[in-house]
Length: 305
Image (cartoon, rainbow, N blue to C red):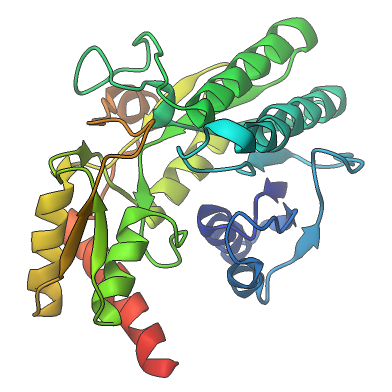
């Protein structure tokens, strides 16, 4: 198959692109290499991968001859209030609208990576896909807007789209602004870790290789118009994660506590029964196994520096 991966220099996109190539597909990556975090890290992710510098919010989008698009590009992070909001509108809403329009015109199947942030503090846990969305952050609001755009293009222009709601993906090469990346880097570099909130906030942490499998499975088997949660098999609090990391590394992490970040949900827990039933996917990497892999990757980078 011939695929395009947007956001292909990012944490998940680069690993998805590499997996597609390893499986014999013809795949190309698009990425704008924005400066939300150090672009050098994105350059490192994209090394030896066929990634083109494309800004889907502004550049021409040629999808002729493409069998499928994995749309992972976007401006991440719940810290999205205030003056940065227009950036989220441009890189999430506008860019996705342009991508959906190009895909609809070219009749190209699309898998869109949304986020568990669209749920906010959900009404029930584990949270099924038909839960009413109440996002707490402008980021979550823009991702929900993208979901509605995808469905509008499906209804009016026949876009073949499957939406995935990722629940806190972690593992080697995780974005440096995410909690686990900060946590393992702090321990590897023997410095304190800034914990936002009291540590009781919990997530359905999902290992990146499992997320990649779900994403490919959605492209190959997801029914048009469907929406799936992609979440880890267990829910873990930040305090439990810190304790687990200490056991893995054999030393304790020093913590500096800070107030909760605005827009950050107290809890996420994914009901994955739909994706298990319709695609046959479930998370296979245990939390401790995945965290150990991320720790080894971070520790090796510090040792090699």
